[in-house]
Length: 171
Image (cartoon, rainbow, N blue to C red):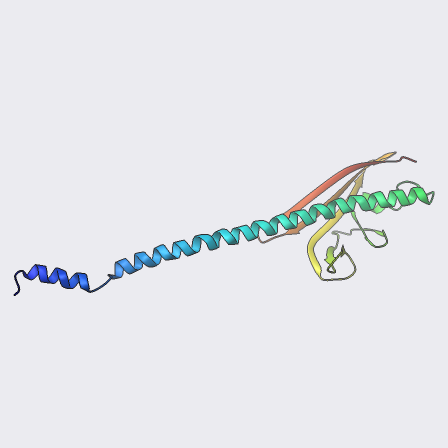
């Protein structure tokens, strides 16, 4: 009945199922196939968040320059000097401008963080955002260079966006 002892042992070994090594290799392959798409999705979400932060910061820097435009236009309409009220923006630490009433205030050592009330970034209400805007002005006579810098920190580093524009006394 038993013709070969080795042959009988091989048949028992085949029928026993998977070895521990085969199970470990299968689990490893399964883990890699699950981890790769999750890593890709995570990195995509991080890249999307970084892009969103940069877009918001760019819009707020442009808004900073536009606030100086609005002050210059208001000065023209009320018969004041074209750069009246902007002296604190010429200081070393720059200034910040309230969006709702165009009040200009100097930054002593650093400008405050912007707040977001759900629809508007400003300095009065809402939780503190991750953004800080500094407006600085250089130049004299009939020309000034306005630079609005918006900075923020993410999980990796501090980022910033700067927008500069030249304004002239066109009165």
